[in-house]
Image 1 (cartoon, rainbow, N blue to C red):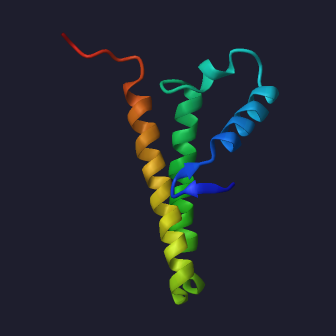
Image 2 (image 1 turned 60 degrees about the horizontal axis):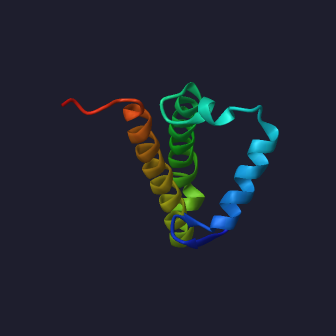
Length: 101
């Protein structure tokens, strides 16, 4: 996956990937994966699992620690996964809620 700037994926690439996923899904698939759904909860679980895996098995691996560039890339990967977890979780946990008033 290519990126144009840190954390920003090319719009055409995103649209292509979305079309590929849509082609493999049944109609109405979006509702099964939007924030507040079990599918979105599943994504949160995977982000937590993979973040822990990358941090514990890659970032802390002796070969990675020996190389400053590798360590920096691994740390950036962990940071990106943790940030994505927070953003998805923020939307997931507030989906369907309305502000009192």
